[in-house]
Length: 285
Image (tube, rainbow, N blue to C red; front, side):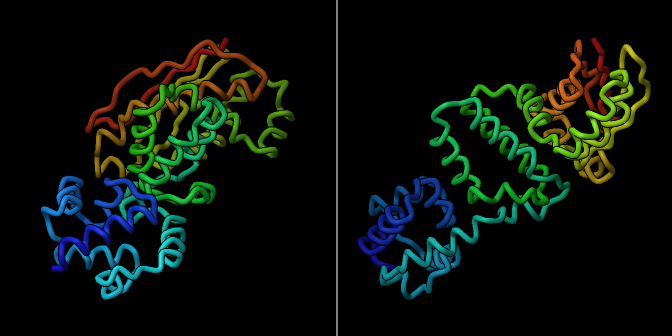
């Protein structure tokens, strides 16, 4: 162990220099927040494993830590590089998705909510992300999508149906719009048939879409969980209410790209372990 007064100075110095909350500092030490408070109150000593854990997380020699001689410029540089990619928890566990959906949610918040910086700063810190990380649209565990939607919903009155609509329109590329322009005179159900699957693949990595019936009045289709997701069946991933609302918003926004309106999008069922497939109905205006 190192002496209590030394470790308090060490922890307080690291917290101050890196601008960490108690929760973040506890995570770096690999202990609970209550145990960290005991350290700060001189009622608990840091054990060797705590210092070793800290050394690994900050990439600092353990002897320099013990002497409270940390080059914080190097530490900040190391953490910045580390935060440019997602943590192992969100990159090594299947099923996978892409970060595009989370980027779209962040874009929606920036566009629709004033004074959003404190929340976004907290979001990036909580998930140990650099602000450029989401620009790469990298492969990520589906759990990351679920965790971020739930985290942001706690602090903002987000309607993920509206977020999905915004995301669909926001994501439409120039090449996609040009194709739509070319076919714009076609009936709405033909446009859906041509472009529905083309666009939806930007948002879904773990579900297959299958159109079962389409005419000038309505469209019926199913959203089937892929094999890997069915095998690992996790209801919070397949049947997450926010992701379902987001998906419905994306689907309902398609007519706006075609210069048309729609009446409604209806989810016809809930999923189960035996039948991990949603069924939807789109009623055209």
